[in-house]
Length: 226
Image 1 (cartoon, rainbow, N blue to C red):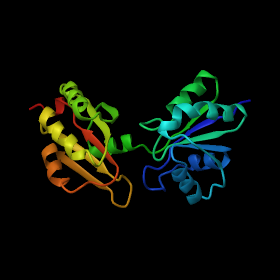
Image 2: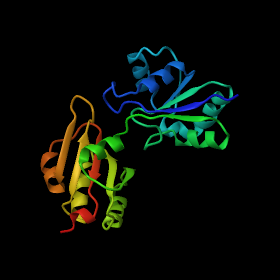
Image 3: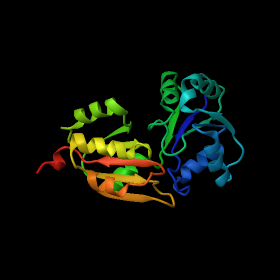
Image 4: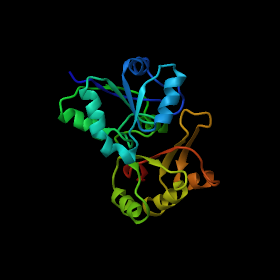
């Protein structure tokens, strides 16, 4: 019989944000398939989960590694699929492996865990439906995306590079107006920072070069109508 693929959620910052079930799963699996084996090794060592065979599934290697992971599973070994932070496949590698397991009848289990997407939305105070767009497109494609979003009433959740935050906020302001925005920086970590206010206020706060991981939550079109 084939092994089981365990799609396992990991902490998004604070290492204590991991479930008991995830720890027990990582103890028992034979192989850990990880976006970054070094980051996953730190997690395994932190909880003294024992030595595991580690297989890299970095984004650039994902397509080429699917067959290797499937071969391991078909040998009867159980595999935990991890990303650096949060749930695999959410703007991170993993979806191709999961898809192929479904196609080939290999058992898939999910071990739910923290997600920067839902954590930021919950912390934002915005309500209603939301859409997650991963990392926003760049330059002209970003302007095209924002124009298409102008009349959408749903809340937008996305990841952003610290090097692009100010530029993205400026373009949001130019195209969508001075909407309310929530910015979560370094969630659950020592230097966590919350900001909620208008786009213009955000530009006044985030003046110095920004560091860390960012999740941006932008209110929808209906909520800015007066």
